Amino acid sequence: MKATRTLVAIILGAVLVGFAGCDWFEDVNTAPTIELRSACPGTGQVLEGDNVTFAWLGTDFDGTVASYEWSYDGAAWVGTEADSAVIDSVTAGQHTFSVRARDNSGALSAKSADCSFTVLPKGVERVALVELFTTNKCQNCPKAEAALNTMLTEFGLDRLVVVAYHDKPSDAPNSDGLATDETDARIGWYTADENYFPEQWPIAVFDGLRPMAGAETADQAAALYRFEISSRLEVVSPIQLTLTGQIGETSGNVAAGVKVAGRLPGDPLVLRFAVIENEVSYNGYFAKVFDFVTRDLLDDQTLTLAAYGDSTHVEQDFAVQAGWVTDNMDVIAFVQDISTREVLQAARLKHE
Image 1 (cartoon, one colour):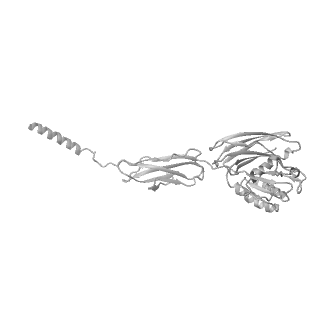
Image 2 (tube, helix red, strand yellow; image 1 turned 90 degrees about the vertical axis):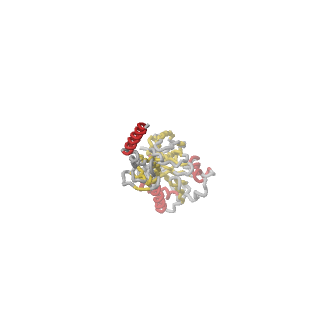
Image 3 (spheres, one colour; image 1 turned 60 degrees about the vertical axis):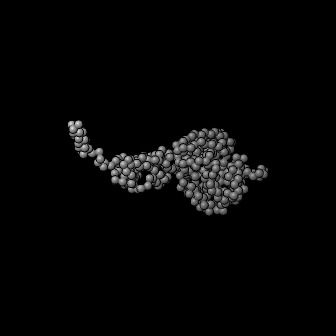
């Protein structure tokens, strides 16, 4: 029995010695971990000028997460106790966001949580559209045309396009000889909102949004038009629009390439085409020559574009009537928001 007690004592002593030499009870701190709670933006989801929010979650196995540090594009780490950060007005290009956690013992997470993403330009250069409501019985309408020709010289044919719709009154015998049922309907589509469109002609509509009535002098109208056009040209377009085609002696064709290059408004969009002619001789009341005369409005094309980079191709044929001077003709195309009337982009196919 005594031998048994002695053996137990020996074994117990060995165990205690073993514990005394073991580091199991040493205070070893485990570094925290970090992960992003917000998904890293995919291509096309963020455009320049947007604000981007990043949210994260830190975890510490043997303590608490005391704070975080985040860095944008390799800049100095920014300390915070919050679990999210907002990057304001991001610029186009490649970017990286990183975040790491620090625990209550001062240890940093071994690895940061990183997000690399691409910010795309919010649009492309705009071509502004002016739609002129006119009639050969209007005394001030030639002044509006003169002002618009001045604007075309100032801004250039690659930044500004003009379409004139001649009105067709209900009393057909007194109708403007340059009007058609199509131009009359186009004017009516706009002026259905009587509270929005004035009655003092001519009316110049800038990118479908802002109507401007009257033109007491060409210089006065030019000054007003210049401000409106300049304002629109400062707004980039979410649509890239290119035209190819030709205008022959008896027929013509136009092909439009439409591509999403920014954030769309979300409303239905339509692609419109107008075949116009300049320097049209007509024995009007106050003028004998008219510019921007709409000869034909081609079929509208509803667009189903949605995401950045989406594109479509549209082709149209049209007849050229006898008496039209093809050297003076253009095809104008524009993409318009049906709900707001805003013209998002315009383009010109010039007959060469």
